[in-house]
Length: 416
Image (cartoon, rainbow, N blue to C red):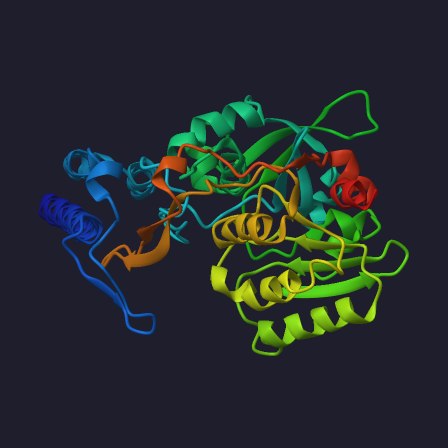
């Protein structure tokens, strides 16, 4: 009887494994159809029809071979390893928008209760749960036995990026995720990680053991915990756009954080308020801050651009602030403002190419429910596509010391 039960159990496990394999293979076939221009996606609202990834054969010459190899290896791979292989395949085109969205299953849900941020002089902890609050503001010397730079280089194949700026941005997010940390060999079996940290005012580094857990745990920002004065550009982080006239310097400061309309204040109405301020004050310079703008619809900014164009003789010099998080349509806007308004770009290089693929579509795989992005249009000029980043005319890099003191060296540079 016992042998009979064991046999039944083994048969059930084999059937379950076979079912898992077939479901993953169905997902991979579905993805290949969607990506390889055999599927058809229509955006009814915008009248856009696309047949899969733009320039698929050029960007993914080995896509079918790589998917086929993954299909054959599914039985011996964990679900997390399958997701990672997919991330590597999709990321192989080096198109920043082409992404396997991080799932909440397969070991990707547990995360370190910390937030990492790259500065020009290294990686630092900029938020943490209350348990690890003492680590905020510390520079990350090592994660496990590896430096952040080494880990970032190892993760490069899994992070779709067009330059090293965006690679660092992507790595800062992935280095919190348990499945990634385990894959990189820096997490123990129970999801704990040994961090080597150094406070800015300390001569010696120290170690801290941190355990991955529920990512919904409340995190406290370093700004709040360390009582860092809020720089102007961080004063309204949740607003898509806002502005302020600075009478001491005669500066009209405009922060544009998202290329989308706010239903509470449509951008056209917002632009009207900004231009009214420009007309009612002595404006020596206009500063348009795009450093937190990750993109959207590049056309949204036109009422502001057109209004400033009509006032070029009255507003003084125009500066556009850019940085690592200036991405996609925000980069297009920066280029447009430099051309139309003769604006000077100031700050740090952007996270993507000025000429690259966009118009994002998303396909959801039927079984795993993984969401995979692809791009249906090329923006810019192919002859300019080798430019790896949008570089500022005035280079100003922000350090960890700047962040901890509440300084904004980029705005300071254009004001003086």
